[in-house]
Length: 469
Ligand SMILES: NC(=O)C1=CN([C@@H]2O[C@H](COP(=O)(O)OP(=O)(O)OC[C@H]3O[C@@H](n4cnc5c(N)ncnc54)[C@H](O)[C@@H]3O)[C@@H](O)[C@H]2O)[C@@H](O)CC1
Ligand SMILES: Nc1ncnc2c1ncn2[C@@H]1O[C@H](COP(=O)(O)OP(=O)(O)O)[C@@H](O)[C@H]1O
Image (tube, rainbow, N blue to C red; front, side, top):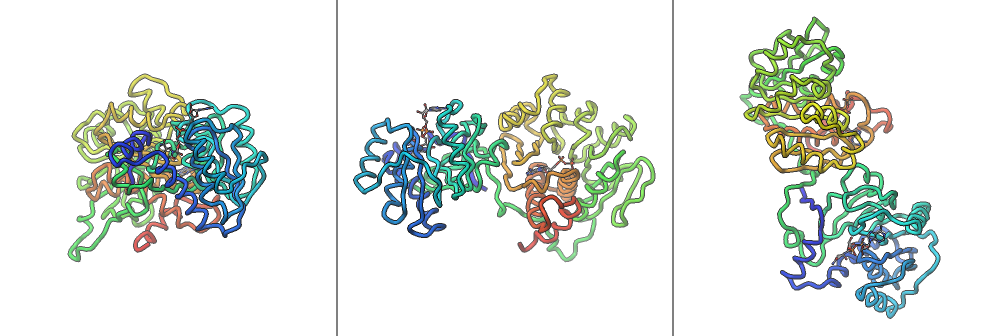
C-alpha cells in the first residue's frame, strides 16, 4: 500500500527546508528517474524526442536531454521558449554539453512529454493542443513527465491530454493520476525518488494506493475448523435471481462456511447453495440489492434486513429504496455500500435531496466519496469505476488494478458476493471491501481469454488461483 497526495508542492518545499536540497537537485533526480527508465528499456543510440514547456516540468525535460545526450540521439524542443532563471540555467548546461534545440517535432523511438506537469491550472491553449495531438499521432513509446500534459490538478481532461504509455511521476503518487477520466492517458505509473527516500520525502496521508501485495486471502489453517467457523452468508435473491445466484456462488467460493439464498419463492439454486424463505438464524452477514426488484414485502425487509444487527452489503436496487437506505443511519452496524456512479447519484438524492449527475460524480470522484464520508463516516463506501475508491472513517483507498474485462453485467454481483463472504467470516466492513475489490480485479486479471469474453463465472473460477500467486 502506498501513500497518495493531492499535491507534492508541500513535500518538495519540505525537502528544501528540512534537508537543504535545492530545486536543481530535485530536478536532477526527476530527470534521472526518466533516464533510468529509458536506459533500461531502449538501446543506446535510440532517438528520443523531448518536448519541454515553460514550467518546472519543462525544466525536468531539459535536464533529461543533458543526461542522455551522447548515449542517445536527443531532439529537444522548447516550443514556448524558456522563462524562469532555472530553465535558462539548465538550458545553458544542456547546450554546453552539446544538446541542440530542434524546431521540428518528428516521431522518435521515445517521446517524452514535459510540456505541463502538476501545475496545469486551466485548459491548454490551441498551440499546446496541436502539439499534444501531434505527439499522440507518433508511434514511439510515450513517456509523460510527472503527469501527462492536459490532465489538470484534479486529474480532469483540460480538454485533451497526452496519451502516455508510461507516466514517470516525481516524488509521490498524486490523486490526479487516479481519476477515472485519466485512466486511458496515464498508462503504467512509475514513481521516482527525488534525492531522499520515499520515507523521508513523504508526510502523513489518509489516502492510499492498493497494490497486489495487499491481498490477504481467507485461510483455513486450523485443522479442527468446521463450516461454522467461517460464517454464514445470507444473500437476498430477488426478481432477477441470476444476480443473487452469482453473488451467492462468489460468497461460497471465497470461503463462507455456509451460504443461503434468501428467496421469495422456491427456485432451483446450484446444489452447493442452500435456500430459505427467511434469513437463517445462524446467518452472520447479509447481502441485498443485486436483482432485488420489488419481490419482498416491506414487512419482510423490515424484520430481516432493516431491524437486523448483522453486517450488511447494500448494492444495486438498494440504492433506489428509501427504507433500505435507512440502514445507513445505524451507527453500530458494519455497513458496506457498493454503488456505481449512477447508483450513487440515486442514493445521494434519496439521502440528501441533492441531484448529482453521473458526469459530476465522475469529474469529482474523490470529492464525492469524501462528501459521503463526511455524512456517514461509519459506513464503508466503495464507489465502482475504472479505479474503485473505498472510504471509511477518513481513510480513502484507491484500487487502480481493474480493467475493461470487468465491464459486463454480473461483475458487481461477484463483488457483492465476495464482500458478504468476508463480512460473514468476521472481517470489518472496510477490510472486506478492500480485500474483495482486490480479489475481483486480480482474479479478472488471471482470465486468459479475449478481453470481451469474460463472464462473472470466470471471475469466480479465478478465485482459487489467487492462492500462491
Ligand atoms: N521544485 C519543484 O517544483 C519541482 C518540480 N518538478 C517538476 O515540475 C512540475 C511542477 O512545476 P510547475 O509548478 O512549474 O508546473 P508546470 O511545469 O506544469 O507549469 C505550470 C506553469 O504553467 C502555467 N499554466 C498552468 N496552466 C496553464 C495553461 N493552461 N496554459 C498556459 N500556462 C499554464 C502556470 O501558471 C505555471 O506557471 C512537476 O510536475 C514536476 O515535473 C520536479 O522537477 C521536482 C522539483
Ligand atoms: N473499465 C473498467 N475498469 C476497471 N473496472 C471496471 C471497469 N468496468 C467495470 N469495472 C468494475 O466491475 C464492477 C462492475 O459492477 P456493476 O456495474 O455494479 O456490475 P453489475 O451490477 O452488472 O454486476 C465494478 O467493481 C467496477 O469497478
